[in-house]
Length: 375
Ligand SMILES: C[S@@+](CC[C@H](N)C(=O)[O-])C[C@H]1O[C@@H](n2cnc3c(N)ncnc32)[C@H](O)[C@@H]1O
View 1 (cartoon, rainbow, N blue to C red):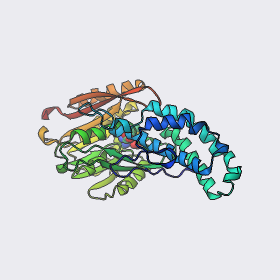
View 2: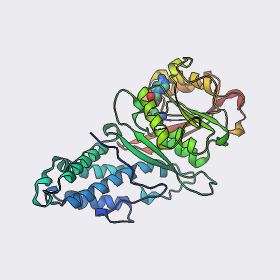
View 3: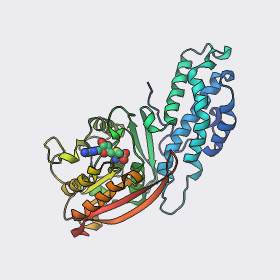
View 4: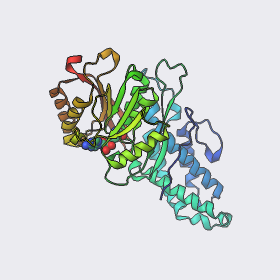
């Protein structure tokens, strides 16, 4: 039913949404104020098609901009936030949602379409209703929305002479079946940002990298953009593997630089799984939501992480970011215990908080795991 939402941003730049289609330099918070206090309280039936279309464009841009807070605003290494004015807080979004959803319902219902002014608009009216329905879905969160394709922007690594943001284009199919990798989860952009912004993986261009439970592939594809020697994106679910293959193409990568492989943690020696061999670096995000994951992942890391690496080369590390959900403490505890039992040591453990879309604050834990004998 829903067509994919394309990002309105061009690479590396912020295009601010504007009231009624005019360019604006105001912060998104101000635009939200205007929409909430003026535009969205105007009766839809007395609005022209042009003004409805312009408001839809503003809402679409604001939704896209709201995704950028993951990549631009969090955990800046020096504590500053250069893009503060260009980002949207979850609180802004909640305020916008409260005002916009009733307005969108009326646009979808089409009562405005029978007014004299709009009656000749024909196909445009259908497109407007479709866009409004799509926006309603996105306002209810990624789990409730349809397919979308968007571009994530990450800060240039320190010392990058061009200082240009890194863009990773990601298609998310929306919920289609039982696969949990249908969307990009919060830990993925957090880990990707950390990798880009802090040069987390030294000498990336000399490393073969494996992403476990890749989902939409954001972290692994970012590493490919940063110049990893090769990247293997792995998952067990056929739908996820299909989506991530598409995302490899969206970013103009192909084998042997970036490959997609089936790897089921429950069956790491299966011939249909990833071929033998080890990888210099492993990455993963949000992989502990069932108790068996806490037991399986350490075995997977033990099997696929290269041995005998020198720490200063950046090789021999598993970089992992996971949300500390109140309901999933046991998974995290078992994972840490099992990693230790398999001889791994966390040489870096950090926690950071992020305000969630749905309200509340989530704490995320990042680990860099290495074999104890190599530390
Ligand atoms: C919560 S999602 C996280 C996806 C992605 N890393 C992210 O952060 O957006 C968990 C991922 O782990 C994958 N997964 C779950 N069980 C798995 C298994 N037994 N073997 C391999 N992958 C698995 C799922 O298919 C899904 O893509």
